[in-house]
Image (cartoon, rainbow, N blue to C red):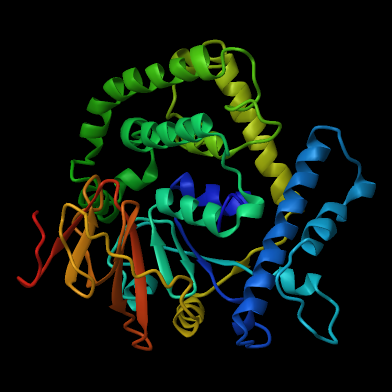
Length: 403
């Protein structure tokens, strides 16, 4: 589901209007039910390399660096560079397999979400990512895991100062810009007339979503958003660069920075032209337009991602193997928790009324991993939460948590 491999899928999720939970599952369960883990990893790596080649081709065409005659060349080249395991097969039609390497499952805009309930997941925010029976929650952790798992296709920077910019942009947009963006939604939005949806939003955000309160809060939200637009216009984009880190194509820094602005600009009435029009912020709008063009081009040339049904996705996930085997529990962590201890974990910024509970599998500075059980099939599932803006504590009186 990642923008790193399929730009349309990740941004459809990140803009929070196409609410989506995405699922990565092992190709062998779809085709040959292969059990060799090396073969499985090899095919997935080849698939993602092929996707990256298609994305780069589309961007090259957009920039006039390639023609129609070049279609497919980079995909073939990148796919062929994969490497640890060469599967022996009489079927050489490799590209037929590429189309089934990933899938997505659209979720309802409001609770309940029965597919997640079937997996034993209480976490209520979306998107989520499944790689086998490992469920990754929160886009911060999702992007990190995809960057780590597919280093040959990474969009993140390698230089430390640029990595710092990426991390600062992540925190700025998620913790600073997005709460104001949510307050700026137009009161004419039809969903604000749906009591069920309004109640769901109030459960999610912990504040009123009554139409009159939305109207009352919009001017203050616009004050903060105009300041954010000005920061982009007058600093990061001031010298006329096309992308945040002066790269040739969109990078992870652009993804971290652009998503709340991209979301708002797609919502009629959210950003009054008198305050946020192209005359006021020409460089920001040019950046948004370039990014939209890159997404459109990639959508045109990228392979189709499989659209799954609920029971089908749950079956693929519960029948897969685990993606990770990490059982590290940091002995120096301030919470002083122990592996195997019963704990619960939940976000503290939004969606905090829904807590995942299970046995502690791993606890590092970056993430907490809980073992729970799917309601369908009763297989163990590992739920991964980031540490940032999440709380973890022992339950049933059996832990040493200092919280």
